[in-house]
Image 1 (tube, rainbow, N blue to C red):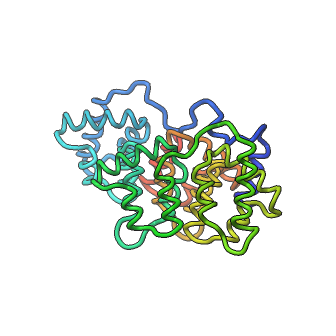
Image 2 (cartoon, helix red, strand yellow):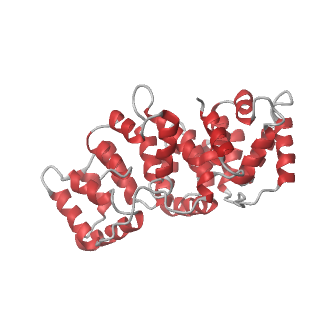
Image 3 (tube, helix red, strand yellow):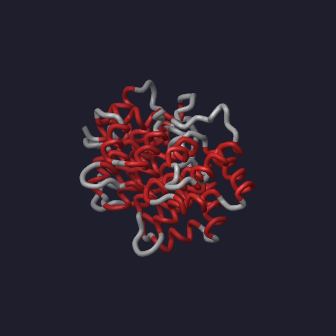
Length: 341
């Protein structure tokens, strides 16, 4: 079953037209605050683990993966005060490979990690557009605004300028529109606007020769996720195949991926991330960058929901595939973030 059949099933099963995560109350992260938290004790444990001959990775996993991001920031402060140098620097020297990547990612604040991933995606020759699409296409206005501020603080450059230098054409226009962080987040649906938008999308693509990308970009980057769901439902009454199929037929490459990210994210964000995780582990080799980025960045937002969607969509648990596709300390820390004791 394709992701879109899955997504339509999810939305159609809901009462009303509501993307799941935004309307449910409760905590859907896998990482919970340690009730007996003591930053000084944790900093001391990490110092000892780093200085142990051969490095005590088990303690590092136990401390870093089982504290919230806010608690980790306090551990960093405490470590700096007692050791006189940044915790990240000492961990960089002590650890290696994918395990090091996860530990350092967990030590960053969410906006620092988003900025780091965006910068890395645009560094050197070639651009990893899929990362830019994933981050800008799934974050809230508040998260994008924080990312832009942090990017400027850490790298001394404007995020938008980096994007302009690395990406061109309609993809550039789409990413820069998302960078404005002015997209509607209203939960109320405007039925009249949804009808006219659905018609505009149909006439811009499927109902003409060639595609008017500016219309697609304008609607998909400005309407709220709830509004987009309604637009796509109404679009289905105009087109026999539906918007997703039509978009696949009209566009290709990174622009298609970017616009599809906005569509999938509006329908069901956890299902979108479940699909990305599945693709990262499918076939030969594992894309550990994607695996790490999604599991770390969603660990205090909706990783529980992503895991539920993964099981529903692929018939096995996310942890089963992580166990099959990873090894060693990297495997242990990934499973710990997913909630393993």
